[in-house]
Image (tube, rainbow, N blue to C red):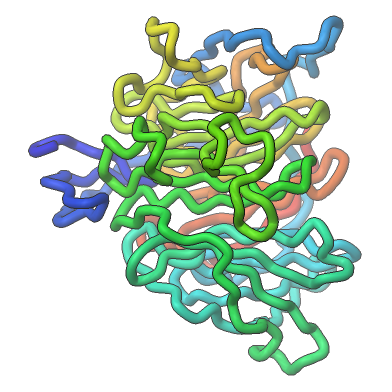
Length: 397
């Protein structure tokens, strides 16, 4: 891949030869991002387009939400966060947030904004897009108090779980990490990193191809995939490829995972130079990268349900609320709403908050019509303002 231009999280680099999935040399350039006001009706949608996906999983008579929605910023929950990446609401109250570069996990009181550092996760090796990334709580968190984390080590990307003991002093509340899964390719770019437990209580993992495009189509590789694991880190029962953790493949860099009200999985994905994607995930399907970026005429590839030009999206986290997928944009500096009817986008996506809070990393359902949203301006690619980075509470329709 000599001489190719490769987009990374809302920036462009000049990519040279990649050896075993590690970026050997890269020059980061500054990427221009549009800014502007937002309104309850949303911004113009010309840069995006929708493409129908197969009807599998769409129940007869499903209704779509209104074509036009709204977003209201209710308040700033917390300020002064360093490179926040993962966000996990605690049952009964509180938000856990991971710091990519500091390798810490902090508890935020969502009522007062008070921050309490649980501790530092050992073994994290932050570099480029790597570091301490996604976090998730065990499906049995109320009884086992386990926190799962995806991070970049010196040799790979891996998943660990740690006991959380809030009775201990601040800074000492994380138990020793137990590695449940390792060997995911790492790179200066495209480390994926989102993890989430699904309605089936299995652990879903979005990975990147670490700058080595060929890994995405190699079903023996863990790079450029969505993986499905048991809580112990084994390939989950019922996976499409027996004995394999691979759930879907042909991805470039997956950083958003969310389920709708019918337990159907959606994922956001960084494109290279043309189209970022929102995909409806079907077990065993091939999503095209690197042979296809965005919609393809090749029937062997599963087409995205919506696409965006790369300068208005660079999608990281997604969440489902009020009949729509809500997608945080890094380079795009905006929150996208994609109304759904089954596994199709039922109307053109709408953009909100354009340029108001800078880069947006993670969006999580807070129940009903509420969302938690984190900014990402202290990650080395943003323009931090006073108070960055922050967690916002939104009301959405």
